[in-house]
Image (cartoon, rainbow over all chains, first blue to last red; front, side):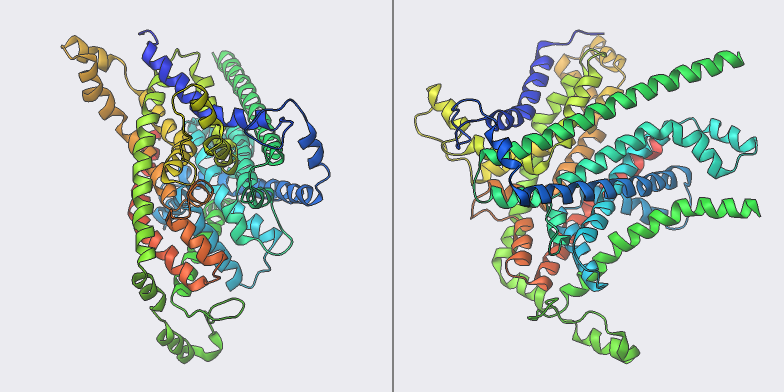
Length: 273
Length: 303
């Protein structure tokens, strides 16, 4: 194995500096005493305190969290099913169309997805608001879940499942007893991904919303258009904190389950041998 | 009987997500297409009715005869739309190239890092992807403003004495796209490079290749699938990008995602915005199908 050369270290360090510096600066200036976000005037948490008195902002945050919880949960179920369909059923009528519909939303510009969903809701006469945002979020996040779960399923040893089926378990029972425990970490990280994607979405929410349903990104966007303020920095810092915490918890859980599973497998093989 | 029931349950695995995507992803495109052919009216919803089944078959025929290409004609008559499409594609292509230029060395450096460090590095690339797009774009406003942090730094370092005007120009859009989409470029290239068999490089060098020649003849061709996937993951969404040109670009910046948004939200012209979306979709259909093939191929190799 060759050494990690200076060039490689430099490109990784510079690259990560580029990725993280803007976020770090944003967090630092959320604690700025002054109303300006570019001139440092001393440490203060007053902008955070102010957030608690901004009722419309708190309402928007509550809407956003409910949308994200519901849509991430539904998207995880649908996305896991889609991943199973893609990996386990290599031949069925319309599979090409199906895999196309799973991959296309990953790259589809959000303005197109947003507009088409809005026109669907109008065409079927569905009242726009909380539920239309939720349905729209389920649709675009389930594809991300499908891709995450699919990659786990591909590296999964199918002979364990076959053994369960041979021993007389029904496919449903096999799924819950064998498959789900193994893919659980991927399903969980799919859920976290769907949750954060929903939490962050501006464009699709703006198209599919109706009266009375304003999400946090929509609120932030309308304030950003009026100018940069430390208050926005404070909201953003809280959001970043929530997401970072979620990701760290997700990775710890995943790691722990993986270690546990390996230990179980080793024990099982030892018992057989 | 139990067997029949379980066969039905396994069918459901396909049917449920399939039906969902058909209804919420595919059918909406047909509705967009249909509305792009109708007339703008001052009403809610602001277009002539789409389907009216009360008239029976004759009624449908009547409706089909009423289809109009007016919105598309309108798009070709106003040079603004044409320019917006062209400049969106150009801006997306240039920023994809810049992202590749910056992303490749990062992915390469990560793949060459000590094995124990790699999971953490991977995690650090993914983390910004999970934080809000809007927030990451917003963070750049404070940096790029004329009195912003970048100019303060450059002036105090004595590099420039007049602030650079970056915000509300195309340069700011390039910075925004490269920054926001960088993880999409780094991840596929990294996974291609990480899988690579290192002995191939050693063989090339033993046979007299210089390190640079070995890179271009062995490493780069082997990482091409990752490069292609990364470029598509950046290019396709960037063409229709709205948030970045809206917040970082200037008033003269033309990008089609912004045009569509304004047509829809400010002008309330739903048929024209539908026509704009359909043409954008036609431009992107080739790269999207290509991306799907790349993905499907990656799946069958992973099997």
